[in-house]
Structure formats: C-alpha cells, structure tokens
Length: 174
Image (cartoon, rainbow, N blue to C red; front, side, top):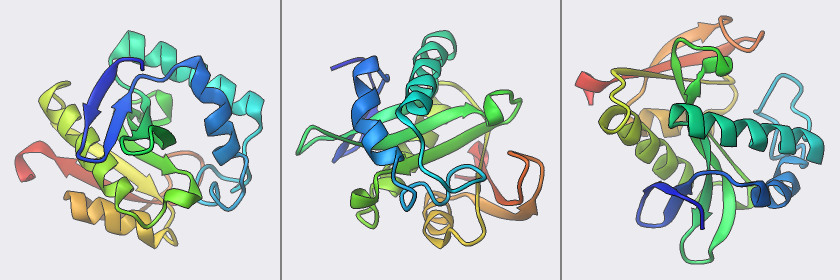
C-alpha cells in the first residue's frame, strides 16, 4: 500500500497511485455517482480519471495534500477519494472534498473522510480555515459538512463557474 496519510476506525486515506485509476474509473464513470460532481453531472471517462489521478499524485508530492484514495479497512477495497486541495486547484482557499462510489453512500464514510481530512489540515498542515462547496440539492453532503462542524455561508457563484452552497470551518471554532 502507498503512504498512509491518515485513518479512521474504518478507513485509510492514502496517497494515490496509478493503480487506483481503474477502480476509481469504474465508480466515476457512473452518472448517478457523479450527479453532484462538476457542472455536467456526467460520468468521467477513464482518461479523465487518469489525468486527475496523475495530478493528485503530483500534488500530493509537491504540496502534501490532495484528494487521497480512500480504502475500507475491512474489505481492503477502494471506495472513493477525499482530502484537501486549493479550491479549483488554484486557491488560495483550501477546499475539503470527498466523493464515494454510490455503493458506499449512506454508511457514514463521508463524515469519517471529512472529519479525518479536516483534522489533518488543521493539525498537520497548520491551516486555520477550510472551505467546502456543494450543490444546494445535495442534502447528504450538506448534512455531512454540518456534522463535521462546517458553517453554511449561503449560495455562492465564486467557484467552478456554477452556483454552490459555500461552507467554512475555522480551526478555533471546532
């Protein structure tokens, strides 16, 4: 297994590797899984996933953060990605994000990923503020962010050329 970044009772968040492309491409090609990711809500091609994993590998090496590969401990199965990146990979704000294969929705994994990623951002990377964005209709993600302590700031059109709900988590407020 590649470098472990952080873990929870049930999950390992680890540095991405090229071997992650095919398992993630199976998940990300499903339009239902991807309905709240990106502007189009369409599945990604294997080439798109490969490009993103290659970027994630570079980013992890260069910046110590990325959307890490998430592995369920019991099954040793890749179930998604989650972590921290400069928003739109430009910043300056640091975005917390996660995406899970649809078979893994509703099991509390997103909350674990978000909590572990936030803790890593504050404790290891010494960030003072994290943001997260999601579509207004993505009620599951909004609940996850609230559980982890994010404050909902309202609708915003600042990121990803679309309207999202902006959330923030400030270190001294947790």
